[in-house]
Amino acid sequence: MNVSRPGRSHVVRSGKDLQNRHETYLRMQTIGFIGLGAMGAPMAWNLDEAGYDLLVYNRSDGPTEPFAEAGIDVADSPRDVGQRSDVVVTIVTDDEALAAVMDGETGLLAGLGSGTTVIQMSTVTPEATEAAAQTVRAQNARFVDAPVSGTVGPAEEGTLTVLAGGDDAVVDNVEEILAAMGEPIVRCGDAGDGARMKLFVNLLLGDMMGAYAEALTFGAAQGLDLDAMQQVVEAGAVDSPLFEIKGDLIAERDFEPRFPVDLQFKDLRYANEVGNEIGVQLPQTAAARESFSAASAMGHGDEDMTAVLKYLESIAGVTVGQ
Image 1 (cartoon, rainbow, N blue to C red):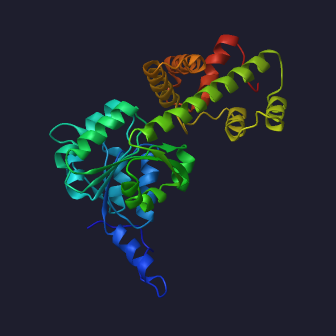
Image 2 (image 1 turned 180 degrees about the vertical axis):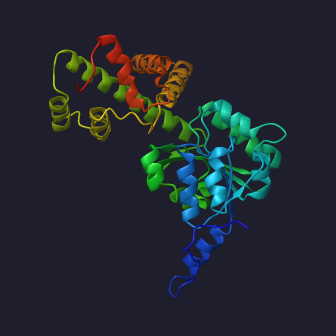
């Protein structure tokens, strides 16, 4: 039997019987959670904190240890997750990682039962999402496409933006589960449209970060003060929470990963591939992709996306803020 964090009860209180009985029923479901990386782990903890019966799995053992220590069941394989769960959440790195946990003798599909709901929250291509949806539905299971927008901080706070795609009735059935991990929940359309929306927003994110890093390097090479540049940015039409947050980190030379260079590069690569498929030219995104690729090649792939600045600094022979 799974053990949740202490201090949570499911007492049905007078005046709210119907609502609380419904919530208690939902929390009696077992949620299988596959993928305990920088984003997945805090999302899983939020489900535990919300009182759900949790079962976890990760392809490497280390990330499961804190959950096991907290009394949360650890599955032996994705197939084990499918066999023991009413709802399964997947959040892994890319298309290849999703295929690895879905397919094969020990994959999720091998254990997936009729009536189970799979919530796919990884940032993967629309093609991979639609393929997963098709194979899940072929087993009379349900599928929700629900990647999230946000980084580690919002994941810990449960304030990620959830980009939900799929049948409205199926999304409705898991809305409280999604709400335990993020808010708002944006209905994007069919399965695959959540993935498309995620590439849309991460395309913009990467382009903005690349342009911001270029502008700072351009200014620093001319002797402009970082604080003054930041003041000008925040006082004008180009002000953005991204620039405010990342500007403070750059000033401190803090490149601890909130959203790593390698993941941003991957998302820009996916966006460019989809752009080519649909006949949309993405010249700025292609340029940003190359900057992030170069930063990764320099050894900054595991650092925060702000480390794209280090590639530009190396070319210009300057250090922003110094």
